[in-house]
Amino acid sequence: MKIVVRVEVRPTEDVEKVRKALENVFDAESIQIEKVDDYQLIVAEGSGYRCLLKLYNAIRSQYILDAAREYLKRGMYDDGVVFYLNKQAAYAGVVSFCSQEYGESPLGAIVFDIQLKNPERLINWLTPKTLNGKPIREIEPPTEDP
Image 1 (cartoon, rainbow, N blue to C red):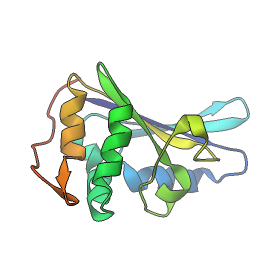
Image 2: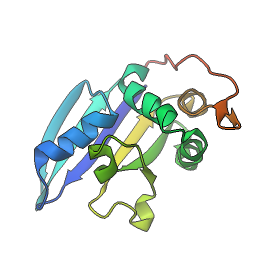
Image 3: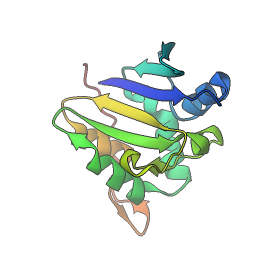
């Protein structure tokens, strides 16, 4: 599994605050800040399910398993899944999924791109099916190598 998370830092934003937003939802193995035109881009990478434990725990503590599952399923492709989190909410320690194309995060979203052979297994681990808001069956985390 290879996880790449990108987030823009607009000219009106503080780099450290945007970095904190990212770190509230993702345990990166490496973080780099790049200059792109008139803004900066934070690129964080990770390679295992442990990097996603903050997200995993937040989804459960906020009781948003069903909504999160729908967003993840929408972003699934052959060898991975892409999804977006609201940057301002992440800064406050809250996970809020958003749709990039609808501008639900005015200052740009935190973009997750998780590449692995079986994205459906990842989705089932992160956001299992529920009954009355409680997981029906928890599964072991994905252990694939990139």
